[in-house]
Amino acid sequence: MYYNTEHLQLLKSAEGKTLEKVAYHFWVNKANPQDIFSFVEYIEFFFTNNTKLILQKAEEISEMILPLATLDIALLNHQLQVEFNGSLQYQTRDASKTDAWKHLINHEIDDVLIEEDEGLFIAEAIIIGSHTHQTIIRLENDGLEAEEYILD
Image 1 (spheres, rainbow, N blue to C red):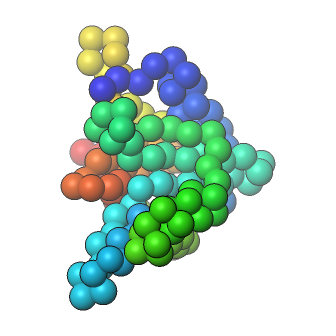
Image 2 (cartoon, rainbow, N blue to C red):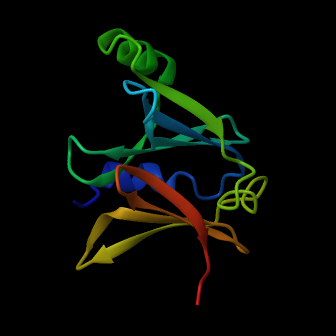
Image 3 (cartoon, rainbow, N blue to C red):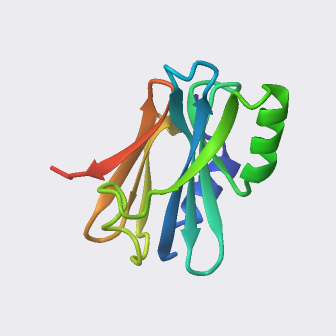
């Protein structure tokens, strides 16, 4: 799957902004209490200028990382709990101090890098970075995964 112009503009809108906080929104299946299953479905970036960027692992479109401008996780969580009688829900955790993000917090985002293939931009991995550190976000099993990215 490839990004369209709107997706690219949304991703690139993070450049030049200072990252204040990163939140992971986990999709959690508690139907079997002995085997709780979860994965990161959304990564939400908060910038010091009060704007946000959200990345979603979107399956309904295709296997891709989908950028979003807004997210109402409380509404989504309510809908999920009502529809599945509380066995499914979203749980939010601050990821700002994790190894993937701690070096980018309070730093300006210089680049949002996306792999290009013959003029099309592939929607399977994104590198977000400052002048000193980078983090890669990629599709992993059922959700999104982020880790510090070391340039060779």
